[in-house]
Length: 249
Image (cartoon, rainbow, N blue to C red):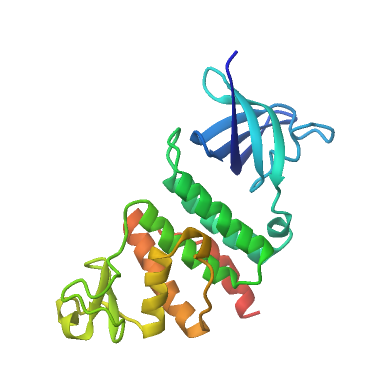
């Protein structure tokens, strides 16, 4: 019997039978895979801790006829802080849904996995606004998937001072004030928002969250990110709408 060892994070769980689970793992070596966790819902199961949603573990697996079977899992990071906070959990569920849609079966994507883990870590351990973490995740993920927006400067004339820029969804990038006539539906941006988008796309992954933005700029990032990801993936993501109920309560 051939075993493999890989690190991965649980991105979906399904209860089956009286005590079993089928989990979807975003793994380092195999991309998105499914694994059977026999008895994982029993209180004394050795799999109970590592077979939880958002738990990052090292797995020992063997390939069955249709799916992998989980022989063992050693927890690396459980991300308890996310599961114990409704707001953080909602944002994590949102980015998790995007990952489920974008990661392919048996196709490793180390950069997407690193971004996902970094984003969950920031949600769990930092005081950064969850929305800022989420918008950074969305914009950078689109670049990783091959949908990099043209944000080095104006995509028409090359102007690169980031002043009086707009984001063109038609052309997938920045237009300066002089070139905006080419897309009258382009979204006007402050200089701070334009620079933030440029930073998110091109900064080193280790430093991607190392910046501060005002609430006004965060609103601009939201408008760009939501529309851009909807256009690229042809899907509207609505989990964050749940939080609107709390904003006005």
